[in-house]
Structure formats: structure tokens, C-alpha cells
Image 1 (cartoon, rainbow, N blue to C red):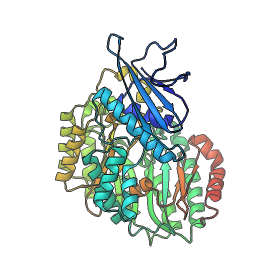
Image 2 (image 1 turned 120 degrees about the vertical axis):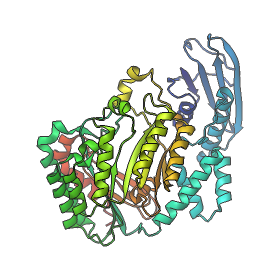
Image 3 (image 1 turned 90 degrees about the vertical axis):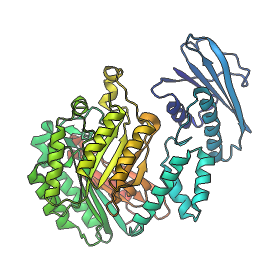
Image 4 (image 1 turned 90 degrees about the horizontal axis):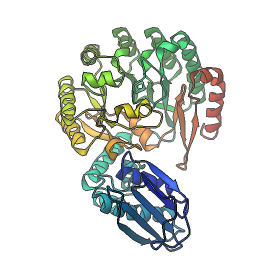
Length: 498
Ligand code: SF4
């Protein structure tokens, strides 16, 4: 257990994030501060049970830190300590200085080097993109990321490469008069073990799915009317798994979109078909008929034992069959999602998955590092899987990156989440011209996204760069009852925008 003692609440979130990155899976306990000036404070009673104790004291002009340590037998060993001068009136600089000091002490304690340095929650490409847009050279961006955030050389280069690609892809997107639309279908055939999205097993809702489609249509029609003077740039059906709906329900929704919107500025139309066990020829034909250009068929892994373990009730063969069927029907922009760090998977399993993907040759591959969030069932059943390795590493990420490169796919978007296995990242790779524009827009937060359906979050990006959000309720029953209220929330949010 790691104990945290902070003399002030300040920056607790950042301290926790970095501590978690150095000691993954370790319990963190916050305990009260007690009087005394570091580093000479005497430990009070009731401090048993910790392996490391981090003391952070904020003064007007400096931050002092001490890491008290115990060996495996519980004997105290030489603490590590340090201090850094700060100007607390400058919060951003203070936070950076604090995180650098903390990083150095924890690096000294564990010997670990974090590839992303002190960056725990930030989107690294956003930093690189911002600096490039300010006119900074690549060398200046690299220097800043390495000095300010201690990011390693490889990740710095990856961030810069992706930021440059994003900049090029987004150059034709109209931020001021354009917008994107997300439609969420929160149903899946079954719930995956690691799921942290809004998803309900379709079996329970099948009888009321028509009601859901109706409510979504209501939001679609409102959006079309409210945004009639704006340009629709991208449409994304996600979830859940949109193809859990029947072919007739999909047809109804896609017809509604087609009927009510002007597609002349549309640059991308995606339906995340997702789980192979939800896809049929008939549904793919419906998507094709409505000119959906980009779909996802997501294996997550090509190892059958893992698919069984994580609750995805489909076979490896089914993935291949559905992929071949989609190609046969003319889909030439197919994404495949993978997760690295799934329970029990080794680097050889990842090599095998990538070899199978190379045979299919998708146009996009999105590689996720397993992120265990609080809501995930994997977390609930943590003890059951604790004996299995759930580590992702730079080496497995490298296997995926090399396979993507062999397929001619380049990294084009990247994001990080908390609690990711190995504190790594998610990377999207794509063939030239087949990048998911919506994926970039959602990460870089440069354009408003109207989000429809249960659990969807609408984001308004105002002219001054301010971002405000409106959430739709997650519960399907409540969503059905309150769809008018969801529309009202959006009306308010966009009052100045439209
Ligand atoms: S397919 Fe995705 S949204 Fe559906 S249960 Fe699995 S992880 Fe959750």
C-alpha cells in the first residue's frame, strides 16, 4: 500500500496519477497531514501497513517531498527526498515542477522509466499540435516535450508525427460552421468482461428496441432542423454495437439520417459494426445501400481462448468470414480494434493476432492498451483473474506497430486513459486517405459534436475555444422517458452557436 500525505489538497489528482503509473495495481491510501516541517517530521501512530509513504509539503516558495520506504520484511530503509522552488501564483508551472520532482523520486525508488514521462492524463498529440500551430519547429516541440514532461524520445517523435498527420487531415474541416454527429446504440449481444461503455445485453431490450429507434429519430430530426445552416462533416454510429439492431431497424435509422441531412459536406460516414456476432450479410447490405463508407469489425484478439474468457461469444473463424463478406460487398475502409494486455495473453499471442490481421489486411487498425476502469466487470471479478498476467509493454506495442507498418498503415491518432496496462497508449493506424476523421475530432476537441442516444455526450466547441458538454442519461429506460429533456439540454448548449 502507498500512503499519501499532502499538506494541502492541491494537485492530489496529479500526484495520484503519477504514483499509480509507477506502482500499477497498488492500493493508494490518503491519510491526514500532520504538523511538522519536512523532512524532519516524526511519523505519528497508526501508520502501519504501508510499503511506501509519500509526504508532500507545499510552502510559499518550494515543494518538499519525502518518500519513506520499507523493504520486503517491513524494515524501514533510507528515505528519498527532494525539493523544488516554485512560484505558487503560477499554477501550471507549479504543477509541472511538482510532477517532475515526483517523477525523479519515484524513478529513483523503482528504477522505472515511464515512456510518457510525467504525462498521465493529457493527450500528448494535443500538446504537439498546439505548439506546431503556434509555429514552433519540430525540434522546439521535441525539446519542450522532453524538458517539460520528461517524455522519452520515441514517444515524443510519435506525438509529433501524429500531430503533423492530424493537422493535414483536418485542414479541410470547417471548425466554425461545420459539426459532426454521433449516434449511440447502447446494445451488444452480450457484455464483454472489460466493458466500461454504456452497453446493455440486447436480449433484455429486444422488445423495446423499436422504441429506442423512435427516440433516436426524434433527436436526429431535431438536430437536422437546428443545424440546418451548418455543415455536417462526419457521422459516426457507435455504442455499444450498432449492428446489434435488426437490419430493418438499421435501415430505418440510416434512412432517417439520409432523409433529413444534406450530405454535400460529409467527409466521413462510419458505422462501428463492432462485434462479429452481431453482423449479417443483410445488415452489411443495409449499410452499403446507405453509403456508409467506413465500418469496424473488431476482433480485439485472434486467440479463441481469450475471446471465450472475455465473454465475446464468437469464433476467430467468424471474424474472418465477416471480414471477407464485407470486402465482397465492396467495403474498402474497414477498421479492426485490438486490445493488448488482455488476461493471460503473451507477446507470442500478440504476434499471432497480428499475423492473422496481416492475412486480412484491414485499412485501419486501432490498438488499445487494456484500461481497467471502475465500471468494468473485469474489475469486479478482479480476484478471479489476478493470477493471470494483464501487462502490456512497449515490446507488444512494438509488435503491433511493426505489423501495421508492414501493412502500409501509419499512426494517425493517439490517446491515453487512466489505468492503462503498462501506462501506455491507444494508437490508430490507417492507410493514407483512410484515417478516421471523427476519431481525430473527438480527441483534438476542435469541432462541435452533437451526440444522440443513451449515454452520449454532446460537446460544443465555442469560437473562443471554450468547450461545454451536455450528457444524455445512460439508462435506456430513463432515456426513453426523457428524450425531450435531452433535446432541451442541447438547445441550451448551442443557444449561442446556432
Ligand atoms: S462490444 Fe464494446 S460496448 Fe459492447 S460489451 Fe463489448 S466492450 Fe462493451
